[in-house]
Image 1 (cartoon, rainbow, N blue to C red):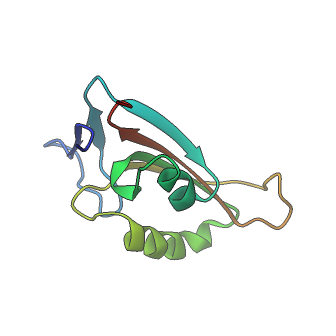
Image 2 (cartoon, helix red, strand yellow):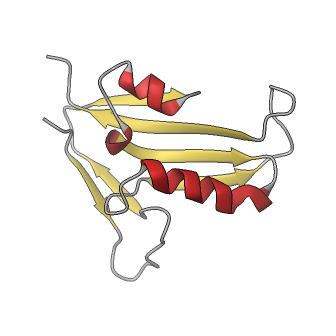
Length: 111
């Protein structure tokens, strides 16, 4: 049974193409805080990109934003896009890294 997540773009706010303005998560769920290779980490607990409620992306060069959006579009459901923040940063702990992504996912409680 999927976790109770609603993806909402309230009236009066701009409807963004790449994220949702508000993601509501009902109680009784497990919250997963994920970094690294998201797909592998999510799969380790039986989750998928469909369970992601929030994505934070950090780019070494904001000029790479179109590439990030293209990759995200391959993994996220356009009808239920997570809330999202993208920030340009001056560097990462791993020299030469161009991108870091973290996510919050919501799944049903463990039986």
